[in-house]
Length: 158
Image (cartoon, rainbow, N blue to C red):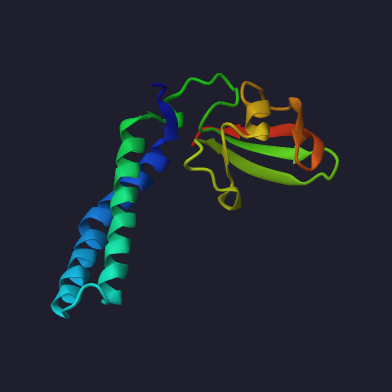
């Protein structure tokens, strides 16, 4: 099975979420189930059923995070010798040559992608077009909004 790339920061976020789920959320749910059981008849106890549903969701998320962490390859972009090229984990400032709009994206794994935070998946059309290119290179990208010409203005490895 292929390892899924993830940045150091992405792995830290997953570990923090896992720790919170195990040490804070899980005990709170167990307490809620215990209190709901004390109210008697479980068949008609909405609190009990809601707590059990939340427990099921939480346990599923714990398993999902543990699987992701066990099947990932953590890439520390600060340790890469990228030779001035765009690589997984690098932060790229690009300019849309048609609109002159400048945006900055970090290329991350699918689980870390968050366009509002400036993190795009390494499998996205823009990231695939940028990987391997250098500053001042112009790339043509087919996006849902049409063909875009983007110029790489700056690449950083932070």
